[in-house]
Length: 115
Image (tube, rainbow, N blue to C red):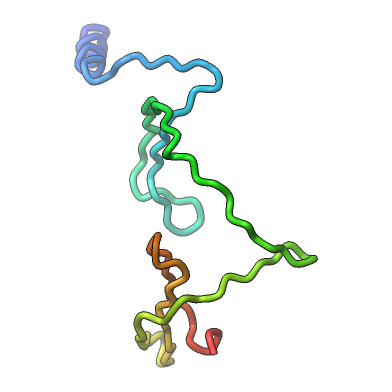
């Protein structure tokens, strides 16, 4: 049994490399996408990768005006597409709303909410 465990460990260790990080260092984290309530599609551990600082990666905060209840409104740029979804015998009208064209931020919203 120990021989088999030792052999398995030696095969697994070939694909591993020791990583050490210091405080205040930045790393990239890769996590698996989830669906439903916290259920992962495929079970994987976090994958760490060292980050080399680059000043061009820093994104400044936008100047956002908040209301009293901490809600802010972003006006839509345009409506890109329309579709009808059939669910349980009902027809649901959806529109694809472009919120920010430079970063490609778009979502499908109910048509009745956009009018």
